[in-house]
Image 1 (cartoon, rainbow, N blue to C red):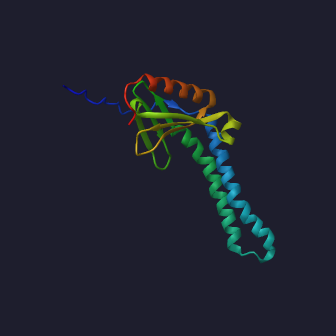
Image 2: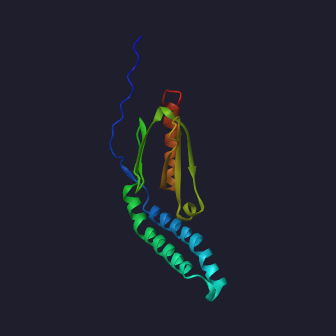
Image 3: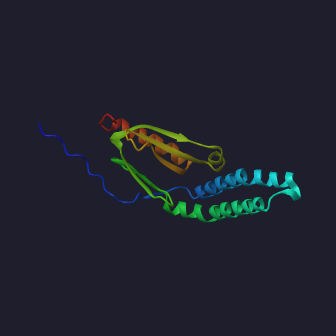
Length: 169
């Protein structure tokens, strides 16, 4: 009895970009980080008044400059880099700006499909689709999708995986 050869998936960049609103989402996340990091330093500066060490002013300023620089420069870059695609054979993702991650998950290995809408994502009508596979590498995430596109993607993936033979292990 001959066994079928494993399906060779094409190695190519995924076709779709995330929503342009994902740029604003990434900027807002950076702004939240800025507040969390800088506000405590400013509170200490105000409480200590003239007795505050000079290095604390420097670190608060440096933190604000670095975080603002990140918020201005990185989100547009992430938008250009983040890509995704779903075919009848696999889920493809490409993400990361410093460390690039290219993931291909065969449809036959998909176990669950989830959508997530954090507070900032809800504000911007965005969502993340998480595709859990039988992989030690963990789930494949597609972040920054339009909420309606994420719901449709989850529906399509669920239908495709149900119609695909295999035990997802």
